[in-house]
Amino acid sequence: MKIISMIPARYSATRFPGKLMQDLGGKTVIRRTYEATVATHLFDDVFVVTDSDIIYNEIVNNGGKAIMSIKEHDCGSDRIAEAVEDLDIDIVINVQGDEPFTDAESLKKLIEVFKDDSDKNIDLASLMVHITDVNEINNPNTVKVIVDQTNFALYFSRSPIPYPRDENVGVKYYKHKGVYAFRKEAILDFYNLPMLPLEASEKIECIRYLEYGKRIKMVETDIEGVEIDTPEDLERAKKLWK
Image 1: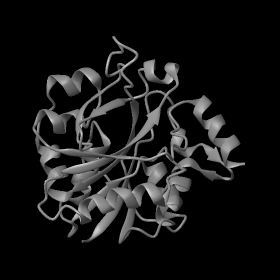
Image 2 (image 1 turned 120 degrees about the vertical axis):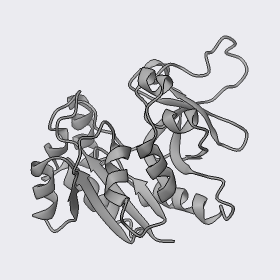
Image 3 (image 1 turned 45 degrees about the vertical axis):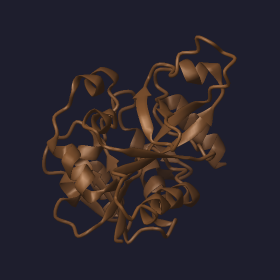
Image 4 (image 1 turned 135 degrees about the vertical axis):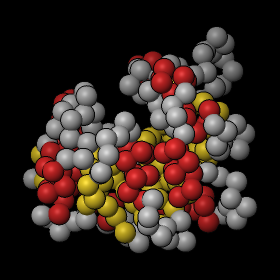
């Protein structure tokens, strides 16, 4: 299989504009993410895909590979789909641009999912982390996921799922990490399918796959890192980097 990584990178993030160009240990966040992804040595190629000249130049001027989006896009998956449409690949892994602590172990687990799926029952795979902190479980900025007995996703939500009506049944809560591995045909399908009400309500793009009957295999990891969504997250990342 030919496997590449695409890092969608938008300059004007809603909650923290310009966050990908913030300094993290002497390099920008997006450059740290790109270099960490390349350093896993898991991919035939790694690209940043962006609509920003600033981000494009940051990567290219420092020896990296970047692609400029042609169209306007609402989400990272759409941006990636446009970029891979004419590429000869089998699997594309979406690494979020605001995750500079991307690790090889978790990405390798995603790749193994497809190597073991000779019947192509899996359209995409993604990561989840077991969480126990009540504040995180109730935080709408933390996307939760519930799965079936074979770890296929049943639903994603910003609300606590399942609702703890009975707290003594031993339910585990999982946080969805926004790292996706797609079959090429699955992400192109996503690009051509209109958004439906559940995705529009939750603002969680992978719900679109579920609404159209696609199968998402979730892979548990205990490596969480820091996703930089806010200035406070950046300060946490700086401390962790040291």
